[in-house]
Length: 437
Image 1 (cartoon, rainbow, N blue to C red):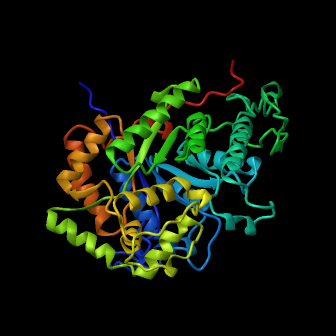
Image 2 (cartoon, rainbow, N blue to C red; image 1 turned 90 degrees about the vertical axis):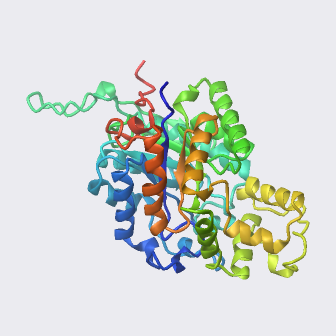
Image 3 (cartoon, helix red, strand yellow; image 1 turned 30 degrees about the vertical axis):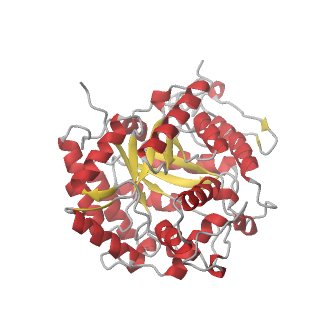
């Protein structure tokens, strides 16, 4: 029987996903703007057959933002620089539909796909933070569901622009003098509720037909959007049971949209805290906890609650009753935090420190981690994972050497790439033009 193959991405997140990873001694404190650091991470991932690297992004900072957010590269610039010094690994970047225009974004990702010879992916986000509006001349920050309505039209426009030319439109025939076949050009002429775009786009169709669409939908509206457009879908499912519920809900909605569920890849976050022995695992966890103070943890927690002031409460009292307080952009996360705090009778201190440094589902020895990953794969909880290291130093090497190698030995992973494009790696079909029929 053929074993399900692990799909794997790596989040490029400066020094690491822990808010104070820059303090760790095995990584450079300025890793967020150290291009050589990103080159090393990406080349190591490619040498280990990782399907893609992924760059997250945001459009607003304040004095409470975590250090990595204060000083980091713009995703498409970084990925374009990585493209010519890699050859196989996919290159995925985040870009907001709320604070950009479809025509520009269509050009940017088409260019990256051509430069990389078919390895581009776009992580579509709607920008959760209200402060983003102050950095753009677009009026007030739209509410949660409206942002998804805007994104839905935005994707339709962008996909239409990517199909401006048929695959063989550019003949470049020197003998006849014909550069392109005018009959194979399509003018979009989109006039919608949120966007207008005439087209055509001034770049040909790309090696993948269209770049791969990535999405992370957690709210009902987000899942609805992901099921309609997403080809690779991230989630922070937490437990195996919650991951299975999410997996089924998304795949069912994908089918309800007339799409093939087998052509949608679901990748939960994998943020391991691991080691060779239980004692080493606990020591590694304590090392992460020691990177953060209570005040910093409270500020981190506040991100999910529209920067609510948690310092006004007794940290050792039960987590406060907040009513409807919560960030519109992190609704599912803030609801989950409140629910868990109430069910487990946690103090504010416990909630803050665990939110800033969570143990998560992938806490355990190397061998335990291997078993958990395979269990999630075999039991319809995941098609693979997004590797998100708390610190991109020794732990990153240890994952490849002590976890991924054992998964490969068990037959659930291969270091060889499937095909040349990101779609090939992920088992996704070439994206045919909507005009082909």
